[in-house]
Length: 260
Image 1 (cartoon, helix red, strand yellow):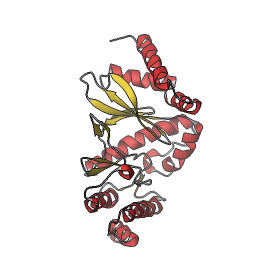
Image 2 (spheres, rainbow, N blue to C red):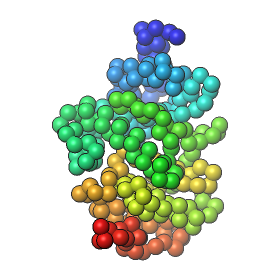
Image 3 (cartoon, helix red, strand yellow):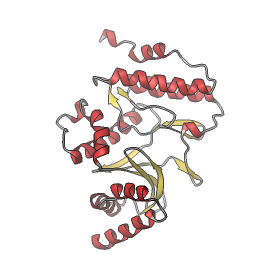
Image 4 (cartoon, helix red, strand yellow):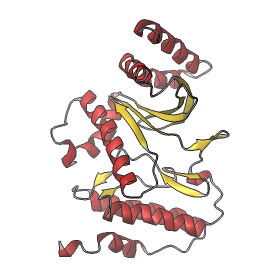
């Protein structure tokens, strides 16, 4: 196994290669993602045997980038790296504050970003344990989350918005289960559910970007739940799917709460 200095130098060269032929703004974004602390986490993942190579970016989001990585056997995984910039901190703060799982995590930018990584890992676990189709979380540390790669040898799975659905009514039924079972079984509200945060793989939807998901007892949970329902129904109506009324779908989620 290479020494830390050798691996760090290798990672720095690889990062520089990833930045080649990019605009100034894109290079700045990569700089926010691949800071020294992040490279140290990647090194730790390598020494632990989780990954062997970082290949190329799969997607770029508001809070971070996702990279295609492989282990020493060539098995693919997805490595999500959250940016540690002030703007990212401001976006995620409202989803951390008020979550009973992260009491006391306020104010400090680094702690908030690290809590966000932890939060997405735990949300993915919670969804997975309750039968919701999400990428399987593997490991996390600081601002890095390693998880199952959703795709094949031809590339990553496309977002729902870019997919041609063979059975749109069945896809809608699956997505409705993400909302209802997510709330009633996993006790989570995704909080940013739309055609952008659902992948299509083998004709089935998979829920992604779960960092902002709120516990059902969060003071903003019902507001975000209603927004998720509205976004999903809007998209599927645009695809000529006969959707469930927003209020009826909300009541399916809340059914039985008054008896608690």
